[in-house]
Image 1: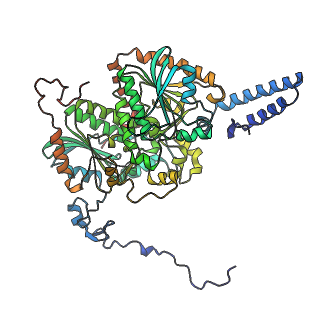
Image 2: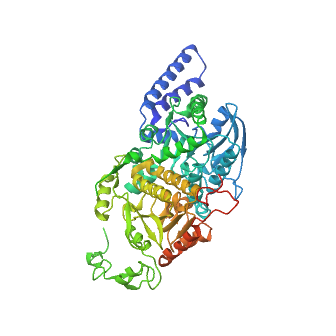
Image 3: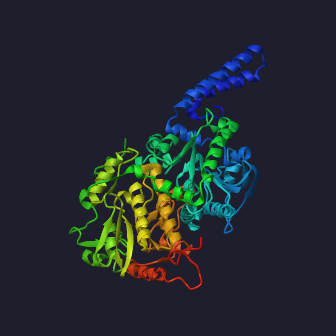
Length: 322
Length: 299
């Protein structure tokens, strides 16, 4: 199977293999036509597949190793990115990236998880996007810098979870996330959140409080990974497909219950098949959202942010007679 | 085919060999020191073993009674979950809700009350572990948020007693968002200088720890409580090692600087009372401007 295709994309994989074989042979007008025809078929099958992805297929797309990272978007949409490092307390956590940049010629602060892409060394360097307490503290320090100099914050969410290790517990992962949750409600500058990959529970939420929550079409956002949920509730992690359906972790599901504000469309086949197109689609949504939230006075914005999260879950509550 | 015929039946656990608790409920064996305790004596001792100070888990109502001086008022008791995701695993979530409601007589996993403690007006929310592991879903999030808002409105201290396995999976991302919702409300208390005391009891894990339980002006734990973000089994799977004895217990957290203090349940009320008197609003110092309560931070 070509490295970029997922298990459910097998019909595409077969065709791509044929294309590859044909391109290796001497080029003739007939072969060129054949390749073009095969590519059209790939596109049409892809279109069909992606028009009705199941929740589990979305999980696979969201976790695709070639899924664009925060830096892929920063390189395409932002200029003058200057990364800053460290939490000024203990260490620099490579699983969370932050820095100053310009967006539409306006200074902004960028913060986001980074899983490391498909390179094994990079993955290890980034700890697969599992942030430790230092990461959340670095993020908060950087966001306070943005607050001090009145610059908007743009947060990119893509993490399996906060790192579940001994050192995380020793250095207070819970406190680090909790403090971010509380303090992000007090930051007066505009905050935009883009859930572009995997929104992995508290590890994601720890930098995901904002005025507008955008979510990519094939991204996921969940209280627990489907495998973990299956292991606990079904006592069998192989029931992950059912768990992914039950958890309602897709963008349309979350839109329906008011957790996100907007779905960012992706190129057919997922953001990883065309990074430039994916960036350009995000650009449109981001620009509009930033203008909208920046137009509101700070106190109203804070109030609206509070009310937005205050309302979350109201759909699931009824008042019963005693 | 075995070489030797087994002449005797294999030893099977017989139904009669369950741990003996005869006569029912009169005596309790302490898991801490293995001593036999008269259950009445245990009750009057706030369910703390009089011999080794092992803290038995207690219910939310008993917890509230242990704090209040006398009469207290329950709030928001009628809120219940609608099962917003129509969640079904091996059995429907709705069924789990109904059986928990029947077993506990509560609508969900937290009780909110207001009254006096050591003479001071307070609002308390206490979580109920026997209701789906004390997990935080939309109702728990809503009630704790309302408790915070009530405390803010009355400008009285808020105490939240955590006892929870974390977020409630069966309500999906909605339960995750309760971490944000409650933290938002606590952000307002913090800004307005209204005291918030977090009491962490066995167990306090997951999304509950990573939100309000760690946000107290004081984070106070009972002895030997399991407190953590990831569960011990998850961590063992990550690092592929056995965890050291006492890992994620209150004493471990205190040693690592994550708790303000550990207090025996029998001293909890008095300790919190002293802390709240320290936090009581007082007249603003002359010549120094301050926020509405005298304790607010300069904005």
